[in-house]
Length: 87
Image (tube, rainbow, N blue to C red; front, side, top):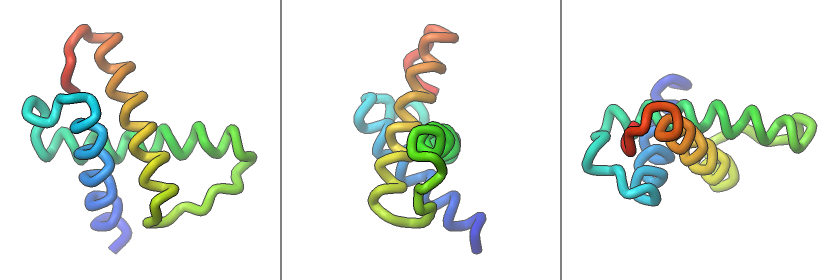
């Protein structure tokens, strides 16, 4: 069940980040899932460094915001390294 929730959460976070970036049409639903899961991992890691590990990981609004911010960071880093807009 944990893997399915990660995929749903990743799809939601990646989709919202792609809407913010304007890359939703280019990357598709698989790209949204990958972007969202990577964003959740990166965002959670950075937030734990800032907050000394006191972040509640779960399916909530705070985690979604951290995942979206992480996905935006991953998308930005990807575009800086490759020169492409979409992930």
